[in-house]
Length: 176
View 1: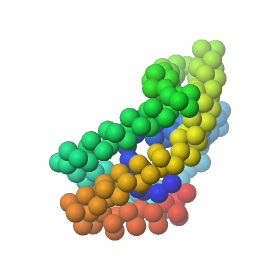
View 2: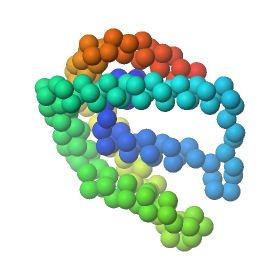
View 3: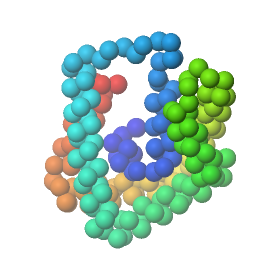
View 4: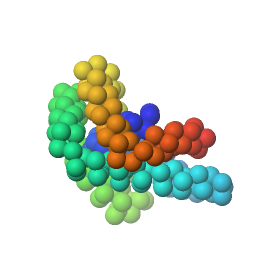
């Protein structure tokens, strides 16, 4: 996924990120691999660039009512498409609440195991809905139009944006 896609802050994107992180965590009885110093440094640089881009994005959207309206319309389109694909906003909210509750629960408990099974089912349903959404040509066009407008506005506000995006894309190729 390109940085342009990642700049579009959508609740479903957040949900997918949470699902991806959870899916990539090692089992509770296995310790995670210790990252190498160079990898940690690269990850910190990626986070630094993402923060810069997010700050510029936030400023641009706050200052540009047309862009904000375009973002809201796109968000509404994504929410509608997600609901049609079987993952309405209510299910997303339940998923997030369940995950937060799981973090406060003893991982070895029976309750935690049931929650993990339910989360796995939500993740499966979400991935199916996300696939349907991402294959919708009308939504793809709306998202591309929004991204183009957003990147143009961000670059106008901060000329280094294009450089940051290129740097981030090249670093992500090496980190992942």
